Length: 286
Image (cartoon, rainbow, N blue to C red; front, side, top):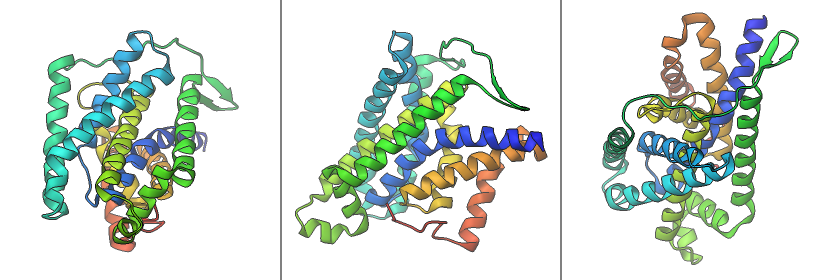
C-alpha cells in the first residue's frame, strides 16, 4: 500500500508538469484545428533554451520566461510557414508536416548541443518525509511553479481580451469573425502562446530530471494522451488528463516496470477513443 501511495504522489507531481504542455497542445488544437505534433521538438527547444538561460545566471522564473519566448517564437514561425498553409487541405497534411517539423527541431538541438544528457545545476536537498511517503523539495517547488502557470493561463483565458478571442474562435470561428475577431491574428496568438507553454513544460520536466535532444519525443505520447483523455480542445480536460496519465504511468511501473510505462499512453488513447471518443470533458470546451 505504501508503494501505491508513493506512486500516486509521484504521479501527481509528474501530472502537474505534464499539464502545462498539454494545455498548450489542446489550445492550439482548439483554435488551429489540427494536432500539432511539432510540440516534441518545441518542448526540447524550450528545455534547452531554459537550460542555457539558467546556466547564464537566470533564476527559474526568468529561465521559464526565456523558454516561453524562444519556444513560442520558433513554433509560430513553423506554424506560419509550414503548417497553417496546409490546414486548408485538411488536418492530416498539417499534422504530417508538424511531425517533420518536430524532427527538424530535434536535430537542430542535437547539432547545437550534442547528444549528451544535461541537468540543471540545482542544490541537492533532502527528501521531506510524511510517514512512509517522501517528496523532494525541488519537486514541490517545480510542481508549485506548474500550478501557478496553470492558474495564470486559466485566468488569462477567462478575463483577458486575448483569452476571450481565443475561446470565441475555438467555439465558433464564423461567428467570432462576424464580431470583428480576426481569425488569422487569433491563430497566431494561439500558436505563440501554445508553443510557449509547451516550451515551459519541456523545461519543467527537465528541472525534474534531465534533458537531451529526445526529451520532447519521450513526452509527446503522454501529452497527446492527456489531451485526448480529457477531450481535445478542452483546457480543463487537458489538466485532468495529465494528472490521470501521470498517476497511471507511475502505477504501471509497479506492475510492468519503467521500460513499459510509455504503453500507458497508447492504452489510454485506445480505451478513450473506443468508449468515449470526445474525451472525459468533451471536445472544444476550451
